[in-house]
Length: 114
Length: 223
Image 1: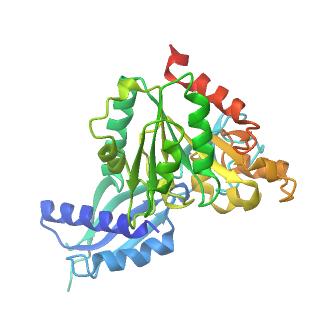
Image 2: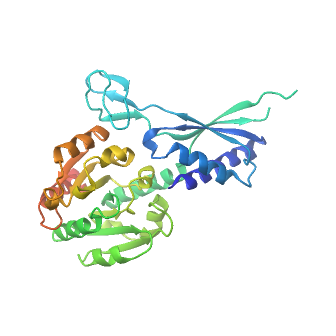
Image 3: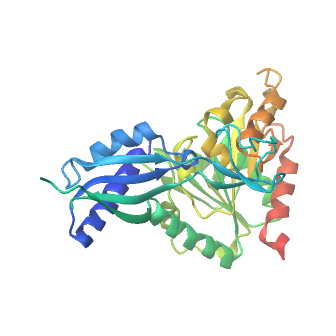
């Protein structure tokens, strides 16, 4: 269960940005890939705990789950893998040695008061 | 009337702090000429026994050392020290995984140029260590035959990050009715690039192959 420490990092990072830009944060937008090793539900619960007592107390965490994009060596093209349990090309079934996307754990945007 | 909120674009990796230290460590390892391998697995898969055996087999030929993470005790370090290799313990307390900062702290000013191989034994946990780069050159994930063939499907991120998948306690495979081909299929599904090896630290079977794999990947092998 490392989601709490990750949630604390997200809150810290957002507060830092908010202070630098003199804004009040309404929501934090996060890109989350399945291969990041972070469980969405655990992170959502942890975010509430981490935000309590901070200026982000009532802010929302908006999670955008990213697909796993692989490079198929056979098709020589980018493909979306069916799941974490099947890192292969959905068209030809070739195992994908190269994963291009799907491990994101990135704050991409802050929704702030206008 | 309230104005609608606006969105500020920010691109910041949440684990950047860890990633920065991991990059520094990787560079330090490269400059020192030490090849660093981390071991991850669930508790009880035989990491410490496996590492003890690995250290003993490498020691006649190479300069080896280990860092070992544990939640509460120093027992593992004491066991590993029996191999004669220098060992440092990292007691993580309540933290369920190792982070790059803990590695940096445990290394201190250790002169790594005196080493050929450094092993990092992570806390027994198949979930959290997946998210943290430790600056290692390669990551080995251990799966013991008593755990079942479908573990890779249950914990894909950690298996996905592996360079080597080591099926441990292989001497018990028959008794545990372990289906190796099924395990290999599952491992390949979540980590198509991993090399799959079967080992028994108890009987020594497969250990020479593992040592050979390491010898091929060490720094001196490259140059």
